Length: 143
Ligand SMILES: [Zn+2]
Image (cartoon, rainbow, N blue to C red; front, side):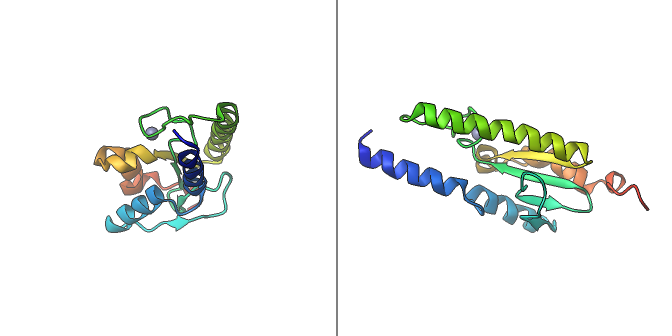
């Protein structure tokens, strides 16, 4: 790995962190294609990428590298290991806290991994669609 590659890689990583990432767009397209209406960048703790207000479903699209998935896509950084490890474990901690906070407020939290989105298997969305399609799981307890 020469330095140019390393530089390019860290630029790519910076891009991966941004909103409207490719896996996120793929998932949004997929949901739209299946007739689901969602909100994006809704202001909730942890800023979930996709939200279904009525069903109280919050979806986080996690980049495998950034959230330390440990899968094949999560090619661990080859340099600055301490830096990346610290950053990633912070992300993971924050993920857990956000998840807990949202769950305790009655949200159904889904973490959908970049690698699963790339696999494009319906299996990935089974639980999510179960909740979205089940008319009895409306989160509203008021009506
Ligand atoms: Zn992964």
